[in-house]
Image (cartoon, rainbow, N blue to C red; front, side):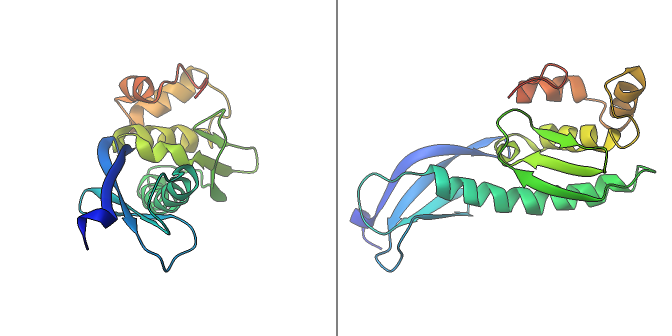
Length: 165
C-alpha cells in the first residue's frame, strides 16, 4: 500500500482509549467501512479526500456493543435471580441504558467509547432494575454489591444518578 493511500484522519475512543483512524483508499467499495485492528481504526474509503465517519463508526460501535454487552450480560446474569427477556443496542441520545417492565434491556452503542468498568456499571445498573424498577436505596445497595465502584463509573459516563448523556 503506498503512502498516498493511507493517512491518519482523526482519533476515536474505543473501550476508554483513544486510537487513530487510518483512512485507506479501496476503489472496490461504494461506501466507507471501519474495522479495528492492531490498535487502529482502519477506514476503507472509495476515494481519497474527506470522509464522513459518523455512519461507519456507528456501524462498527453497534456491532462491537452487541458482542461486548452479550458477553458481559452472560457473565453478570449468573449473579442475579431475576432474568432479562432480551436486549437491544440503540441510538438513544437521552440515556445509556434502560430496563422496561417486560424485562427488555437496551444499551446505547456510544457506551463502547468508555472504559470497560463504566460499561459494566451500566449493564449492572440495568440488571438491578429487574429487581427494583426504581432508584430507591435498595436499588443502589444492589448496584453497589455488584459494582462497588459505581459512583466513580457514573462520573466517567457523565451520569448523575441516571440523568442525561
